[in-house]
Image (cartoon, rainbow over all chains, first blue to last red; front, top):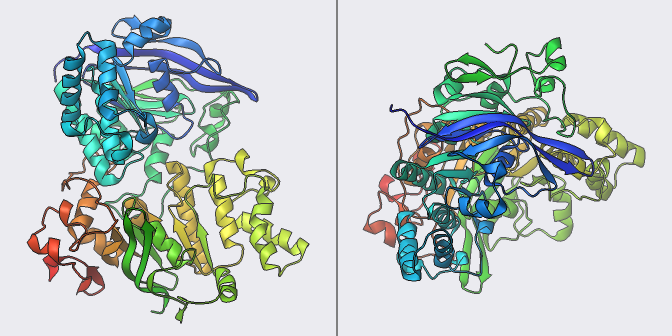
Length: 322
Length: 314
């Protein structure tokens, strides 16, 4: 494989939410990088901080209640967290764009889908209306929406089609980075397949880098090259897909694999992770996963394990994972 | 084997401004005592409507319905009230299916209160017992649902469903809103409850892996009709209907060595409003012929216990 250039570098990102009942430590020192044309999966459960990371990259977090408590996000040389609001408007849509879980709410119901694709192009590119329209039609056709439906409204499309339109808007200006936050969770499995294939093809054709946020380990296996497993705002395991799936190290990652029924095997019994995620308002001294962990020892409650190398490019945050 | 629940050619049509919506269009099924029938299909295929018909939350348009061998298609209100003690439902969204203004113990005690057979202190004892059964710590008795996470909330609705010792429960996507680690806890709980109390389940889900894990037999639905029905191992080992095959091939598998044999199906679900004659799946089917667009295939037993509705197997 040829050497690829670094596109995104997140270092020690910390995000908090200030709430009436205390400070929620949503993201707690997350670092990872992404090359051009690479797909990385971020896996974790509700409240793990996946979406907060995505919205931080987009600078779409509302502050307050959110507070960027530290770290940096560098996208192709620019430090996103230090950019002005005005510059961010140039970056969003042009360099990085995001697709959301629910295509039903991501589109404006009162505007035709064509106009919504055209709008992004008009904002970011110096094109005449006619050319912008031409380009919008092209992009819609690329995602499989016929040009003659340009003047239709979102309500006239099904869920899968709407997600295609959302993807068309996200890709209209050929961003270098696409963040897909649970892009197929609201879709049926046969439609999900079509949308995933579309993202994969676009990545291959346009060399777009993709951050795919999902809770579905099956989708990650199909789509991603690298995986970050995130729990309670921290990366607990990071590595190439083969490392994570075939040499699973962290007890939480193992727990995730033990929790999903496999369609290819007959399991007598699933092995769920006991308990549920701890209250993110309470900062934990030791390992964030300790109270649900099967192999915890005394030191886990007292000291926080570092994310340390367990192999070439494989990192794990656990004292006893081996 | 005696069947606990049976439907014969069950139909439910809804009148809409644009025509008649065939939500459930002639479904026949049998669920054996202490068995779980999984119903899979994509959104809009009528699986939830089917669940509601069987538990009589909705009246059917045509066909008949049997419970414990008794025809309950046209029973009166009083009989239905008593029947409801035996059949319960668990809903998908644990956030909206419990009353936010009631405490956990009030929610679980509600069916007992309505049944009015127990005294106050007996009820409290029963609530305690139920909470233990579903794995809810008794310290949550006085808390409100919003203070608990999704998994615990789903445990509340399971405890409520169990309160009157039902023999049959319709579970409508009970784990779809939950995280995978919690999902596994709830699935194991449902399995244990079935072993412990000998209950019969109708388990509705869009997730094939989940259905495979929990069900003894499976029915695959497409646009209001059952396209395939058989034992679980048979369905996964020997899927016959082109839709079932496509569905199985589309599931992402959490194994990087899994060789995906993709059977792409074109387009999306067609409208269930005034459906044209012929097979419902024909417009998307990779194997469809002219006949499929003219003649509706009947569900036939092609192998012992394996029912398929497809012209390929005639």
